[in-house]
Amino acid sequence: MSVAGVGSRLDTWNACLVPTEAEHDYCGNERNHVLVIDLDPYLPALNNPAHSDYEKMAPLFDRARVLSFDNQLQGLVQLCAGEFSRAPDNAAMQRHLAAGILHCMSERLGYKQAHQARACFSPETIRRYVMENLHKKITVADLASVACLSVSRFHETFRSLTGITPHQYLLKVRLEQATKLITGTSLTVSEISFRTGFSSQGALTNALQKHRAITPSALRAAD
Image 1 (cartoon, rainbow, N blue to C red):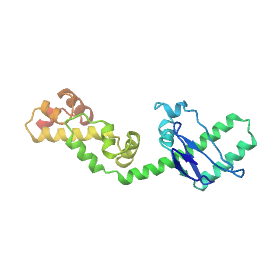
Image 2: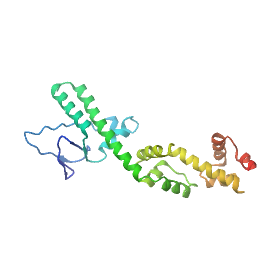
Image 3: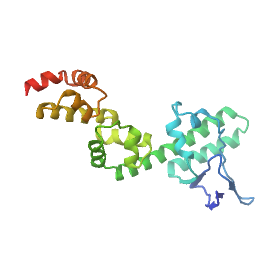
């Protein structure tokens, strides 16, 4: 099997995932039995981020790749291939079994990527970036870029490691730093709100009231 000029060998323990736009060629003989699952490129699960399956399925085809089977997945593929041969006209069954194979592949790929992401993920690097840019608007995409991960993978990895979302973490750090400046300096609340990335003095006041049940003036007076 050749995909985009890169060759690979297909057997009962490997699958080749081919994106729609990739050029590919196959050469076999009369003894080969190859299971081919063709996907409609306009399927919502693959081209619409709003679809519930998008994040799970789209990474399978972000590039050409060869995926090795474990015993369970190899057994599932063999079972499905037998059912396809037994009932060649049952299109509904074929769609469901094919989708099951793809979801199992996606789960394995996601598990592998998650472990790779955890291995190279550095919370300290993220915190350093946040502290250096606290006065600016920081998006999850910015943090994902620092971690060299996709936004979805970063969000999943960050929450798994810290127990909170990136948005919750950003607000937590902003409030911590604002509290330190309110109680430890004579800076105005307006200046503090600017330095800690809040859009206005009112936004900082509202955040403190909502999450700490206190106002800036009360916090300063209590110190």
